[in-house]
Image (cartoon, rainbow, N blue to C red; front, side):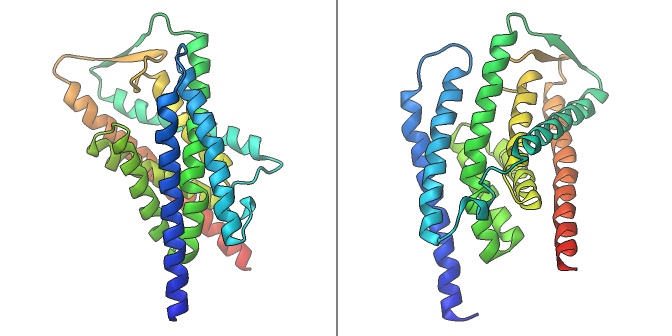
Amino acid sequence: MTSGGRRSRWTTFSRVVLLMVGCAIILMAANPFTPHLAEQWPTAIVGTVTGFATLGLSLLFLRWDGLRLADVGAAPRRRSLVRMALGFLVGLLLVAMQMGLVTLEGHLRWVRSSGVGVAPSLSALAAYLALACREELAFHGYPLRRMEQDFGLWGAQIFVATIFAFEHVAGGYSWRNAILGAFAGSLLFGMAALATRGLAVPIGLHAAWNFGQWILGQKAVSGLWMPVVAGGYRARFDRNEMLAYLAVVGPATVAFWWMKRRRQKTAAR
């Protein structure tokens, strides 16, 4: 590789890091101004505001590189809403499969939460959709696509997933949940973005995953249902939940990787 080629690669790397730092600063700056509203509407508003700010920052970096939103999969397309809905359905299916695996062992039952109805559900859906838009733009738009171009698929995926995990640690995740949870999730969402050459499907996947976990009581905020684990089985439940998560996310990531490979082979003919 020529010295010019090396400069090009590390210029890309430095710009990606700069954009990610900018996205983190935007998020930190917005949080203190969160309005005091009921349910999860404050999170929905912060997600929306930071999402638009992240989009604006991405546009600046794209102009710097002489690129367009379409070049990083962030431009709306004719079937974007359909793709997002499809991703959402797949995401809900994956959550159902994960919880189904956990439930198979027994010692677990689901109880309907009292006082959680339509309004909390709508606020949760809005919040997780807004946050998914913001995170997919910040990680799997400009950063992933630019890194893939100069560092290859897995170099880009591992780098972006690592930063994704660190952001979740900063947001209060344990290292275990960040490494096994957020890191693996980023690989799935990133592979979906690369396979579909757009952000609609990963946004749907991401939003559905968080919304599905909320429905089943896996978030800090009460969902429609909550798991009741038999005494003495809590540690086993937590372990099995993570193993089931990896058992579902891993094959889904491989499926999107296979889809990407198949598309590449078709295009090469």
